[in-house]
Length: 278
Length: 162
Ligand SMILES: Cc1cc2nc3c(=O)[nH]c(=O)nc-3n(C[C@H](O)[C@H](O)[C@H](O)COP(=O)(O)OP(=O)(O)OC[C@H]3O[C@@H](n4cnc5c(N)ncnc54)[C@H](O)[C@@H]3O)c2cc1C
Ligand code: FES
Ligand code: FES
Image (cartoon, rainbow over all chains, first blue to last red):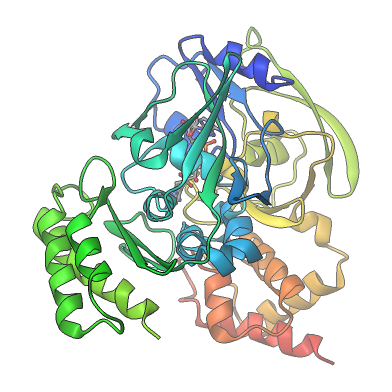
């Protein structure tokens, strides 16, 4: 295990370094170090330390809530703006691993790692978040549902980094659900983010993780729910769950079977809808 | 050690002392505190974030030192290990409660357990049993079955009320 280590002083320098092949960005390191130890990177030449370059804070700017990419899970889970307005994200962040990891694991790393089981990702989908990307050549904005392109793959080009996430500022209700081997320290077999808001009209956003190579929305269920009077009846919730089962296209792997995951997509949606019913 | 590889000079605060040291790019904080500073209370169990034996306080918060690279440390970073809390009133109360409850068998997990207990009780001096379990969820013990550890945390909290 022999590689170089760079601590760039600014975003420009970091971006130039990351254009070299075999150069990998590191922040919390909870994914990167496990991968290095497991010999995942066949041609690792250098680590580029992004600590200190991006914000570790959450701010409301105009009609957006801006989450710095270096925010760690516990900070997000405990932040009053997130708890008040985006409960799905607070719950997702709190469901990651255990307290020690939540104090170093960043949201930028969770999305940057682009694993189909990353827990903040379905939450960000359900909140219609945007990813603010930066490099030495400028900035661009990509909606979260266009950011991840496959297992461990995303739209970042060499030299590009995640600066922050922007969530439309509105009060939502929501629920994050996940199934793992045990409560703490388990990677999701399947997870689900649900957000609901009402701006004169009800809106539901349902995002399923670990049931395909990227997160899937369940538009048929969203439409059904948006056209159903409140409070939702058990029949409507059951029908929405059936749509979630139909939408899920999971695989069988070491964590679970595809049949189980498909059924559980419906169960998790029912749990989430019941959780936001008063 | 391979001397051709670039060593990186880092500065940080360890158990209250400002220090400088040289580390290899891939060295974890865990390896550094054990090898460079001979502070061996902090243990390596799994080496991948799952067991908590390597727990330390990083800027006041518990983290797994096996997953943090030493090279990422900066002069404002503060690391505290169990050794650094030897004279701390709360840590002593916790250690005494572990002994009194018979919560220590082989002892391998205990430095990590007591670090997690310490950061729980600092933040929340009167935790419920559920809060105790949640705070210790990242620490594995292969000996005790956890009951006595949970009882020790509760006892440390109770004794702090006086
Ligand atoms: C024991 C254990 C349990 C875990 N449990 C869970 C869990 O329950 N749920 C879950 O979702 N995850 C879990 N994880 C995974 C992990 O903790 C998260 O994915 C974490 O959020 C990654 O953040 P980091 O800062 O540590 O990332 P790093 O390891 O530093 O980086 C991860 C990846 O993202 C890239 N990256 C980081 N920051 C940026 C940026 N600003 N711009 C561009 N690219 C970037 C890196 O290059 C790297 O490829 C677990 C990990 C461990 C070790
Ligand atoms: S050695 Fe660090 S968590 Fe197991
Ligand atoms: S006392 Fe042996 S592992 Fe906990």
